[in-house]
Image (cartoon, rainbow, N blue to C red; front, side):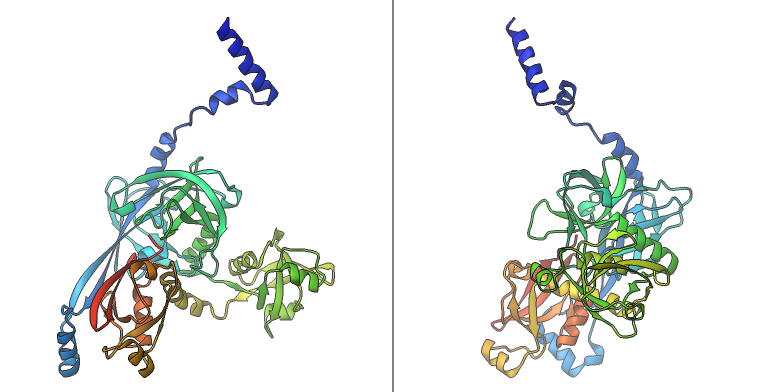
Length: 461
């Protein structure tokens, strides 16, 4: 009798809160994704890269200076084979593979390892440093199991996702979590739009797929928060699909250019310009002779949508324009003087496309490190009592940055980056460009007349 009363009570509570008993019971246990993982694992690959680094075998400054001064042409060098690890996934059954640019950047040899251990030499079809994506090609003996692409725009915060990758070279590993945020900008690139997840992503996961629970790829795992736990970031697959299409056809991304400068609409700007809206991209400048100029776009216009897609902010508009194919009629809905107007404009290829791609890696490395350097002036030499004849001096270390956590201090003189000598700012920039996106950077610095090594793990994995 007592148990019957409890049963009736439970049914009444469930009815009151409109929560069916069957649903309550179904939520009491989670459904296993093991069958889905088993089906998808063959579509995920491990990537091993090799490049050769030439460096002096002498770590002692005396010997280095001796050879540099008296025998510069006979300076001995040793070759070091630097190994790298990453992940990727099979885009098509004929052997096209998607991964991160920083996984294969500067690689002289790329090996793709399938689930069963079969190895293939891979060639780079194209890379895009701006979005950190790369497309590889192998020549398989038969048809490969390709992934199914999903729709990252349909993801919602709280949706379940899981990652498959090669963390720390351990081989295929599965981690699960949820989408914890969307549209994250980390300062890594000008078109940042990351999916944030708490599915564990570790060194070696780079380039691997982020799946939804239907088994469709919704992102490309790319970065971790160096100073955080449980924070991983993936490139939305909708962006990756456009980039990869360009890479497959052209070997590079051909970005569209409208010829405008844009900014967000703040409440103050909205009030001053009497614009009753807080979204869209405000045109602050129109380049003379650009497609926008020829079409009649003016300073003060607000771009509301592009091809029917609403524009919430300037960053979204910049990404949309960059991924719009040049030469195709594109419709812009523009607000001017309180009235909406439609402009049909053909974008052209970005005139600084190659320059942007070349400079991106350098900027990423400097931003990630959190240090500011300077040439060594007489004033700085006296202030910090510097003995070194070359190098660059650190004048600022950002609080909480990677460099700060690694122990860098203002006044430290950077003499080498991963074995490359730093004679001045030019060599320092070249060294960052060469090594700036590696998993670990090794600095040789002079501090108080002594040389020490400091290692930094970057925000990439």
